[in-house]
Length: 245
Image 1 (cartoon, one colour):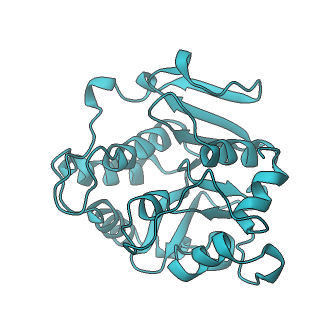
Image 2: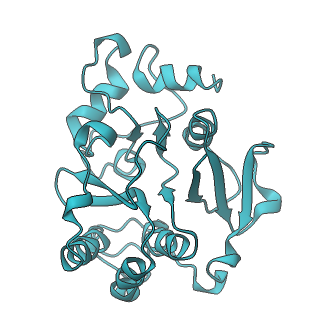
């Protein structure tokens, strides 16, 4: 049973984030959640392993974006980019963001490195398996330039892509069919179309692109309320499947 690592900042776990946790647990994974205030986390589950994030990185290093450029003020995106590779450097294995839903157990993916494709940037690390501490160190060295004043949302992705090329790890980028590739039109269908009409659902997991959907980064007309799923949509059906609505 593989351990799935993730990071959460705050106390109140949203409906979509509960879906992340339950979908991995119910697909026979152990879910290890790192947070800086574990005693006040709103969700309690005997199968959820809650760990103080200070074990990975002292909270004194925590930052949020101040709102420069296209980096939303208050976003923990830059810090979580750093934190995930600190986790992987120490533990190896899998890391997922808290807006990822598991559809199938990941244990069949046996390579030491598994990288998820992205339509625009080649690859992203919101779903990643990495058992190479040297690679993590290379990424973290580049990420030293990421801080609260960052004004380019995709800068961490660009730096990650550079590191992948330097290590010749493009061969570990899996097919889109496993995890999707953050294609806008696909995601809109998962949220709007009836589940039984879909033919493009990934086999192993979905990334819901929370920041893009809740801050209108993709389209100013698009702003998703994850607490009000459209009945019969894929998102709605998954919430029902995992007992959350």
